[in-house]
Amino acid sequence: MEFKNKKILVIGAGISGFAAAKIAKKFGADVTLSDSKSESDLKYNFDELRSLDINLKFGKQNDDQLDGVDLIIVSPAVPLKIPLLQSAINRGIEIISEVELAFDLASSPIFAVTGTNGKTTTVTLLGLLLETAYKKVGVGGNIGVALSEVALDVSDGGCIAAEISSYQMESTKNFHPHVSAILNVTPDHLKRHGSMENYQAMKEKIFSQETANDFLVLNYDDDRCRGMIDRANCKVFYFSRKTDLDEGAILKGDQLIIKWNNQIYNLCTIDELGIKGNHNIENALAASAVAFLAGADPQKMIEVLKKFTGVEHRIEFVREIDGVKYYNDSKATNTDSAIKALETFNGKIILIAGGDDKGTDLTDFMQLVKARVDELILVGDAAARFKQAAIDNNFDQNKIHEAGYSMNKAVEIAKNISHADQIVLLSPACASFDMYDGFESRGKDFKKIVKELISN
Image 1 (cartoon, helix red, strand yellow):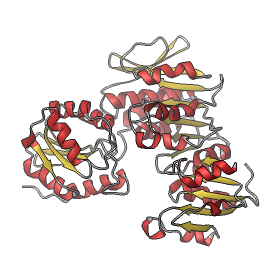
Image 2 (cartoon, helix red, strand yellow):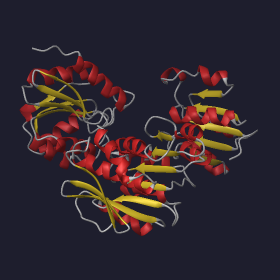
Image 3 (cartoon, rainbow, N blue to C red):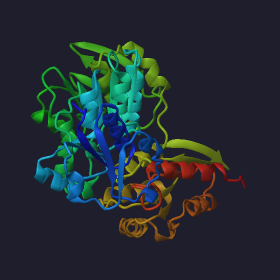
Image 4 (cartoon, rainbow, N blue to C red):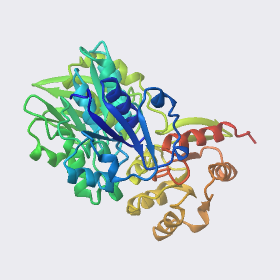
C-alpha cells in the first residue's frame, strides 16, 4: 500500500485509530484523524499526534471532510452505516479497517482467532505456544494492542497471533491469515450487525481469502461453526471437547490430544491444564490446534499448557475474605460468556450482573442462574429487564438485590449477605458502557473495591 503524498482520513480516535494515523504519517501521508466526539469526551492525550503534524477533527463530521481524500482507515468501533462513510462509499473512496492495514504491512504470517467468546484467552495462550517455535511473536488486534503496530514490530522471520472481532472484519477485503480459527458463534453485537446471519457473515470473512495452502480451525461442537466447512476453500481442522474425531484436536477421556496424518500427539490432562472449566478446555484445544498447524512441536507445547493460568478479567480470582472467594469475570459481556462462568462453579454463587444491555434473550442464562445462584445482585441499565427475566424463570424475588449504578454498593451487598464457602462472582452478561469506558475499567474497579474490604 502506497502512502506517500496521499491524503488519508482516519475515523475513530481509539487504539486502532491512533496507530493507523501514526503509521500513515510515518510513510509520508497527509493524515487527518476524525472523531465524532469532542476532544474533552475522549480519554486519550493527543499531544503526540499534534507533534507529528497529524490533523485532528473532533465533533460533528461533515461530507467536506472527504474532499480530496484518497483512502479512509476506519476504527472497529465505527460502523460502515454512519452517514460520513456512506457518503464516502457513494464517492467511490476506498475504505479499509486497521486490520486490513496490518495485513498489508505484515511480512510474517498471521494466525488469527475470532469467535463470540474465548478470543482473548485463546490468543494469549496461542502467543505463548508460538514462542516455542518462533524467535519473535507479536500478539495484537482486539486484545488491546493495534495489529498494525504489531505487524511493523515483528517484521520478517516471526509470526503474529491476532485476536479479531466482527467489528474489525466489517471493512476488510483482502485480510488473509495463514491459519484462522472460529471458536463459537452465539448471539452478540446484534445492534451493530442487525441479525445473526450478518454477525456470522462477519466472522466468516476471516477465512474468505484463504486458499488450499491455508488452514481453518473450527469448533466441531458448535453447529454454526461446524457447517462453515461448506464455505471454506482451505483445509479445515476441527477441535472438539465432546466428539472423538478421526483428525483434529480433541479431548479423549481426560487427555487433550492432537490427531494428524495418522499420528497421535498427547498434550496434557484436564487436571494438568492451567486454565479450568469446560470452556477453557475448548480454548486450549483451539490454541493448540492453531499452534500445531503453525509449526509448533506438541511436546514443547505441553509445559505452556500446564503453566498458563488465564487472563485478567476472565474468571480471575481476586481474594478470599471470611471464607468467601471473589472472582472478577468482567470480560463476560454477553450471556453465553456468563453462562460459561456459572458452569465453572458448583453453585453457592452470589452473582453481580447487569450493565449496558445488549437486548439478547435471557432465558438460558436465567435458568442457570436459578440452578446455581444463591443471590442475584443487579447493576446498571439492564437491572430492570434482568430482574423481570429472573422472576419469569422462577428465581426467588426475595433473593434479588439492586445496586443502581454503583459497584461499591454491589460489593457491599455481596459482602453483607455472603457466608463462608460461597463465591461472589462479577459476571455481568452485559457491556459496561453505561457505567465504565470498557470491561477492563469495570473489572479493575471491582478488584479495587474487593481488595479494600475489611474482614469481619
